[in-house]
Image (cartoon, rainbow, N blue to C red):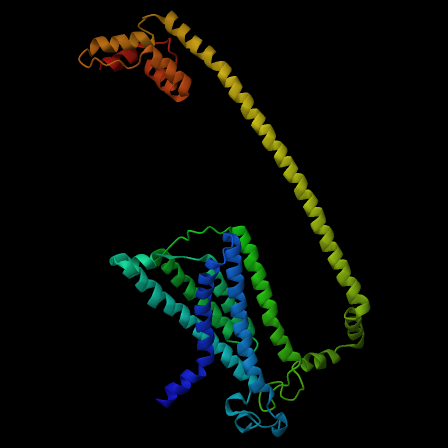
Length: 409
């Protein structure tokens, strides 16, 4: 029993962070409805608050770990000791790099367990209840909607954990990749079976840009603690590959001093302010000029597209006027053909009369004069079908004996 309690206590910080990240966004979603924002701004403010909450929870976790690993008296420990003889810090923080990696590992495992638990023990039972039971609670709950921003932010949070722990726990990137694969297929099954599309539209272009900005900010915020640990914090004296050095960054300095002198001079000049500042200014100027030229080109393309739209509108108006002018002439031409054709056996009227004489029991007229004109004015395909009945050659005035035999049969 004591082992289970110790296990839960060791995972308590990670469990607390995961629970807060799961409950507080729901509270944000309820409160934002009373603030009467526009739909787009409501989504953006909710996502911003959720991102800040997740990043703040990671910052608080790291802030609670740092005092435990910086208050160690490293002078008590000889660098030649192995880890089991290190008594400078507490028993569980003898090697603070390993301890920090363990915390990130626990946070990754807890987040993965929370995602699977929500899908299997909340979304799936809710779907069964709303589908097979009809009561007041099911009507209030309703079907769950798949919220794309919320799920994307969950991926960003998992990626932030990977970035923070990759330097201290090299196994975390592999675990994160496996976790993403499993979560993808579970989310896909939950989307197809447990949820319905969201009723609130969200533009893909705007969301893509917003998520990229969030991912960039998250990367920078996760990169800063790792750089501080490498350059400012003293490595553990009882374990680790950097226990002989004042900082981890000192390894790079020592390796750089072993290079040839001319390469060192080149690198030092490239990193000096006299070369680096003008280079940065030049790069920024080129970027600004590029965007200025691209913006001018886009404006020109937009003006050309507007002119094309105006010309297409004029062309459509011209074609409609020409069609209106052609309608009386087409009608007159069909009337003249009908009048001049008479009741000759090779014409459409002759065929119609012949069929009516051979099959008087049906007493059905295939087409009358007005129908022929109406079909010609409304649908060209209908006239084509009439011409096909008149003869396989497609000419109303032509008639073949094979056609008469076919119709007589």
